[in-house]
Image (tube, rainbow, N blue to C red; front, side, top):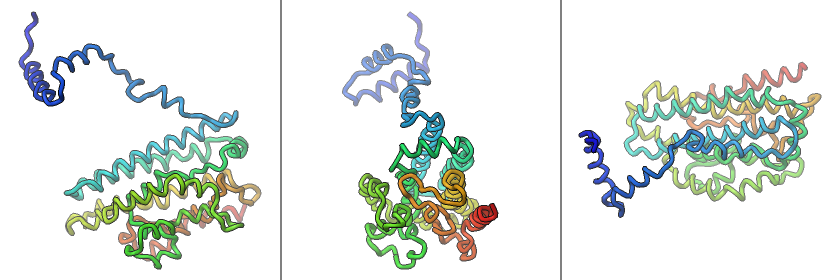
Length: 322
């Protein structure tokens, strides 16, 4: 019989110690290893299932681009939430740990921003304007994970509509703060002033979850975790710059890319075509209108006054010239 190497024997002893409290002897686990198939790449990532999820609703070829890109986006949102949860859960948070996670967050959102040309330039406009009608009332407005990213990042009072924000404080009930979230204004029909079906569906599906998360992270959002750092850690220039970068990436650059897509596909002869779901995107998307910031304490008043304005002003001037 072949002699067992000492390092293998040591591992066997360690495995026996690990499995003795599981209710099964180690021999049973070894049998499982003998009977198990070799793991493959396609099984590990569930490739066949993943590639079966692009269930288009029309015969237009470019709808597959549209649905695939949105699914990719949601996977990156999932990764972002994964990093946020680690920051929030860290009991002994340091600037070093916080910065490592922020670098990941900025990498994920930067990839999404840089890839948005897939949406802006990568689809046939005529196809989009046709297949989008089969998607009603669904809308990217209904991305729950993006709202979760906001809730994990900053207290709800920072997410109030800009011109109403000064009327609210952390003392207001979470339910009241949530009801006045800026994004809800984007789900109001401008002609009737009523909630669109898109917003009603979204609220019905996710309101309880949003409120649960908001209560769970009260006083522990990324904003709060930064403020709780010791002063020396809190003054870390690299950390502050990473926080500012994350703020701009999410609350300015990501929205501006959506503005670019909306102007390409939802403008015709200087007239606005309604967005899917009836969302009023011209009032809802421009960051210069919302002035949302996860970390308002890191910006000057002058910076807020010009929050995303340069890009939007350029866009609208170009639009009026043309």
